[in-house]
Amino acid sequence: MKKIVWLFGLLLFIVIGSACSDDRLKVVIDPGHGGIDAGATGVSGKYEKDFTLSLSKKVEQLLKKESDIKVLMTRSDDTFISQESRQRPKYANEVKADLFISIHGNTFSDSSVSGTETFYYHKNSQSFAEIMQKHVVEATGFRDRGAMERDLFVVKETEMPAALLEIGYLTNQEDEAKMWTDDFQNRVAASIVAGIKEYQESLERAEE
Image 1 (cartoon, one colour):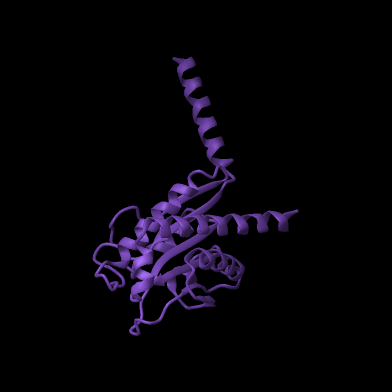
Image 2 (image 1 turned 45 degrees about the horizontal axis):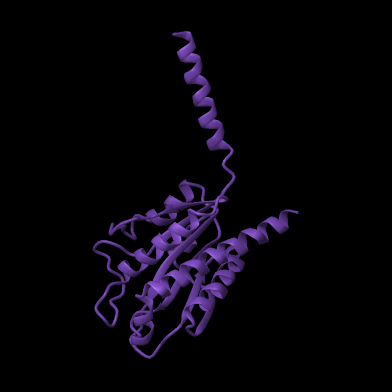
């Protein structure tokens, strides 16, 4: 009996020690909207919430292949997360994420408006947002609308570098047609991962 208790204690020690020594970059991916919050309605009638989830899952799968990155999702299905609860930034803060990325599709009353843009709030998020914008706009091929400071709660209430990516305008017929294709989403997902890795490398250089 004592041997069993000893072995159990040793196993518990190993598990806890392994968890504590996990020095992987922790990234939270936030698929915008969900459930009754459909987000923007595209030209085709499709919803932003479905686009963001589809793209986010592709990002998740790519990040899972990176041994030095741990990926977490704010939602993995068509779940409603109320804005009032502030659950998205709360979750990122609770898991002590290193980076937070919220993925969206844009909308505007003028259907000719096109482009990719990135929003951040805190100064310590600016360089991260600029790196993400650079990579994502290369992948979309859309107009570069830049990385800008914006008072949005998901990037304001997070305690780590955070960026909100507006991939393209779902209200622009040409943009939307591309945004729903697997080829486009795979390309953008790869660009998001490349942006994360570039930022990660910049942190490592700063520590040298």
